Each structure stands twice: as C-alpha cells, then as structure tokens.
Amino acid sequence: MKKLPKILLFATAMGLAGAAAAQALKPEDKVKFRQAAYTFMAWNMEKIKAQTVDGSAPFDQAQVAAAANAIAAAANSGMGALYSPDTVGVVGFHKSRLKKEFFEQPDQVREIAINFTEQANKLAEIAAMGDKAEIAQQFGEVGKACKACHDKFRMKD
Image (tube, rainbow, N blue to C red; front, top):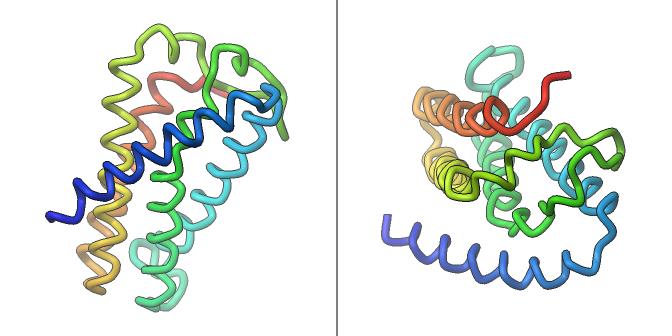
C-alpha cells in the first residue's frame, strides 16, 4: 500500500502538466479526448466483466491484469485537464453529457475523481494477484465509482 501515495503524487504531477497542454486544446478536442478515454476504459471494463463476473469468456489472468492496468493508466492520466466550462454541451464524437453543475461543485468532483482513481489503482493491484473472486469484487467498486459521477454530473440520454 505504500505504493499508492507515490502513484497519486505522480498522477497529480502529470495532471498539472496535462492541464497546461489541455489549455491549448479547442473545447471539441477536449471532449473527443475524454470520450475516447471513457470508451477505452469501458472496453477494458467489459473484458474484465466477461472474464470475472459473467463468465461469458474464459478467465485469463494476464488479460484481466492488462485491462485493469489500462483502466488505472487512464484514471491516472490527468484527464481532469480535459474538463472546462466551455465543454458543456459541446460535440466531440457525440454531444457531451456533462452537466454544468460539475463546475459548481468542485469539492464533490474532486472527491469522486480521487475515489475513482483509488478504486482503479486497487483493481490493477488485485488483478495482478490473480484471484478471480477478489477481482470481481473490486470490479464492482470501480463500477460504483464510475456511477457516482454519472449519477451526479452526467445528463441522461
């Protein structure tokens, strides 16, 4: 567990560097990058779900660990820099569903984001150990962390 604070420190540093680079992006590009990252994470979540929850695919610990590492990498990538008030309702690959309340409640956003990153990092750690039941349990925690943001700050379809 000593590793986690170092990971968070690194993620914060990368987020600050990413914030400077993201300022130069057009709002529609920020939305595209966000949407691409979330699609990538969803694809990897589906792989884990199929192998540890549904049983619709055979369990392959190396594949599950790689998928969990991909999710953690995206969570630690500094994506927060891709959020700015000028991206609300903007079309990237499709129209952003981000609510304006996201920018009115920064403390809650920060809490949700930190929890998501922690849960994603924990999933990567557990997946590396290979216990299918523990991976499935932590997969659920990552899902809850995603849902917390969706419920609060994402418009319904």
